[in-house]
Length: 74
Image (cartoon, rainbow, N blue to C red; front, side):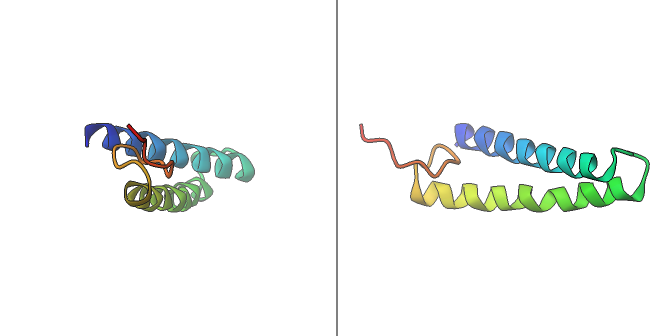
């Protein structure tokens, strides 16, 4: 379970960071503007979808990771 949670946190954080930085760059990279606050809020949506995808990944794939990869055959 610890491996899964670390995987989930890493994937969610990376998704949020990439979405937020992409929106900031598209808006002009002014951290003091209302646009930056909007970008922070909008970037949370892909991160939330990453959490949902990871939850499905435990049902479809290997339950010890957040990936949709097939279960390992050992």
